[in-house]
Picture 1 (cartoon, helix red, strand yellow):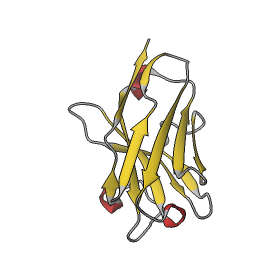
Picture 2 (cartoon, helix red, strand yellow):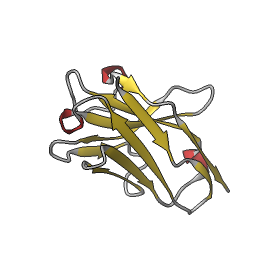
Picture 3 (cartoon, rainbow, N blue to C red):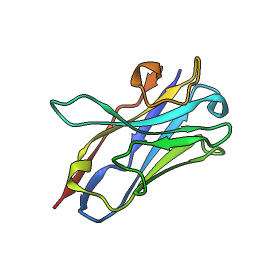
Length: 125
């Protein structure tokens, strides 16, 4: 059974940092692409970053470039999203997702096959 468990959300002040974790199981982690997405109530979900586990290829949304860093611990089948210099507009529910059937380096959510449950990040001004 494929499982993605996102954690690490919480409350941070503007300028602060949080690290999200996505623990994966039930599929070949090394052949997947893991993405982070976020959604504000009433708005569409948007792609934040992705990481191709096999070679480390990654990309970021323009809104988070230079502030967020995606990484993985392949021994733990876990992907991290380090979020620095947080802004109030980063407030959202953050989801991790796995593209495992036909892994593509994309932040288009329709290509992702499995989703975690989401973790809430709130940034106060």
